[in-house]
Image (cartoon, helix red, strand yellow):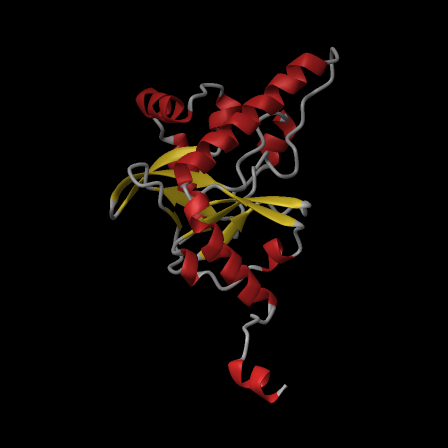
Length: 204
């Protein structure tokens, strides 16, 4: 299975009605903002799929040369629940922006992630329009405007947290999961927990 090429095939098959559904869900209609997203048919029914390495639309030469990287990740989003899964991979995965940042954003709800990513891409287009120099082509940023990392699958099933351990802080989209994530990152970093030992107090 090649998730990236399956996503690309689904993207090329999108009908105008499908595009409009995605635009309505994400709150933007510009092709660049919608480029990472396509509706894919799965065993569980239609899902919004997001290719984390989407084709570069702003540079015509780069787009012509572009081919779907077989190792790039595609995330399926259940729009009813916001749950995300990594296409073709069971378990839990940390996927997303590879650019080191002092503050890393982490999304557990796919609807929030998709809307923020689409808004970031729209903002990139708006900045180019404002700064445009005649004859100067726009370029796609290396991070594709990704807003951060996502949890694809179950939070407790994630085993690789290293990209977040280098950050100064992690900003999570779900307040209810802050303490859980804090414990998981502490365990992943190898930081010991501290408790008071009654028997040590008596000896002292």
